[in-house]
Length: 116
Image (cartoon, rainbow, N blue to C red; front, top):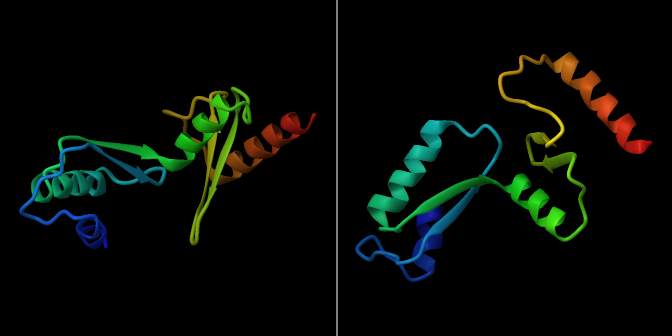
């Protein structure tokens, strides 16, 4: 699918592309998946650089800059088979050991505070 889209834009495997590429991905995308995609864009198409990012985070920051979102909040990214809920600024997620039941209680508490 990626190959077809890149080739539709005029690049083939023998040509290199002279501008960087931004690839959005879902939350918790496996490292091996990201590394394989980076390998593809560097070795096959010759992109000079690649950046990866979470689309919901890009959207949240964009809306913050336009005054739609506050500093603290939740980015909800619904998908076909999963929905990602990403806390923004108000909770340190790294290194926390949270079970599903705990996250439900935590999310309910946050929603109550936001509604006040």
